Length: 331
Image 1 (cartoon, rainbow, N blue to C red):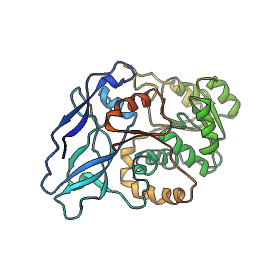
Image 2: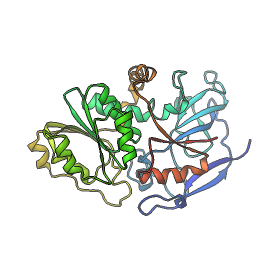
Image 3: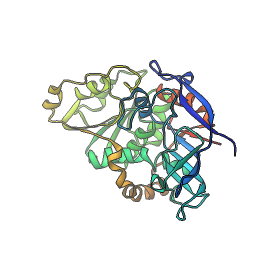
Image 4: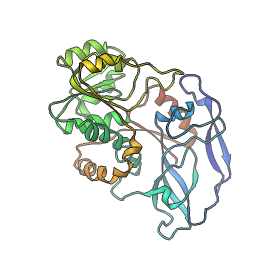
């Protein structure tokens, strides 16, 4: 066995993270813990919340320079001191940006044979899909009468949310960063209309597309867009606050829309932290797997190969240059 290649945070990024803010190093492979597992990563999930970890503003904790970047992986058990978890099995775990990681049995979850390809355990059948379902189905209760607005609609969570809402009969309006992405949203995600944020005035287009207001807004970006939507919210509209993509790279956060806008619309605003729904993963899979098998939903993956390319892929993600769920395959 060779050493354990890892990606560590080299320095605090100034604004958008660059590949030079990270460093590839080789460390010793972890020892097999008593009663535990040694795993080798096969797929690594890259997610915007990692920028908040770097900035020290995430609920899961902070990452300091010199520390290995954290992240969820699909990993293969290569050695085991647990009778229930044999080598060769695939698990979902917090393996981090490294090739090898050690875990106790309660820190991993065996992948079901129903999850194929295995990378879907990090996207549509993992935290990505669970986030979208929890926000749109369990919290917002989206139905056929709703006009739903989803920014970053071709991204990981946004694309899943759009499909779930369309299946439930809602009219989905998406926002994306290029004509190509807007075409994809309309053709593949069930989106009725898509606003190109780099070529159109979002406020004007929303007023045209939703003359009676937006019923549900799945806020994945924060920033000025939240104000724009609140000004066009339908009576008793619902907002699910999930992400801050527009603010992750900033040192200061936007103060947000004035409460008067929300009061006037009798709006409901809820925050979504996907970890609160971790105990409902099996319930989600029971709902989602039949849709996936029937071809009614899917997940585009923005795939990079090799751990050494994780920093560049993360930089692309934080600039909105990804197209689908960002995943690194550790070939």
